[in-house]
Image 1 (cartoon, helix red, strand yellow):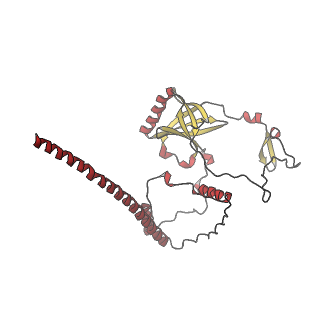
Image 2: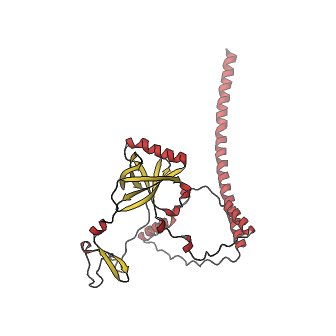
Length: 304
């Protein structure tokens, strides 16, 4: 069972629901240590003073904020604590809003919200069910460690999930991007082809269809090299060429998508035929059993 990273309560009005948070994410990234080539000595990083070159222990390190070119204001840990938000053990809900009004670009980390005791379960389920029926999510604030977060709490299957959110001034505007300029009008034929392409590639969302193939390949390389096998360098990939004719590119992509869709449907149909064949093989046996039972009944009736 995952360990709770925060314990407190959801609060709104006079309602108080004891809950705890556990991280939704369990990263499986492949991590490496660093070594010096030829000697295989481990690399360690040290905190070194710029002028003396001497290593500095943690207790002698202070934080500084650059207020001008090469000019810093130094702050101690005690001074920084004065600016920290007041510690709280509550997630204070302020509003319930439609989920579609929140752009996912604002979401940061995700946590599961669980009732912290059996007695909290009824109020927890009540809040979750009410949000489901109203098709709304809760927006609130809470403090974890030394930072105050704006959060979104939403129903997720039989539980609830909490997403910490970025503040508006932390999210860059698309207007900052280059190469957008004025809107270009898409041609009718191009737009029709693009819509056909989307239709040919339309699927239901299946997260299990996506695997971390890079980590699997890296671990495979590690095991092969550990067994003494030689690893061949990957060939250099050529840079993708420029799209010269958008219509031709759309047509070619649409043809490929349709071919892939037919192959997927053919595979599904083959599976259905196998299932029907299996069902058909078992059906006569059941029918024969019924027929034999009926024959025995008629025989007994004639005998009597």
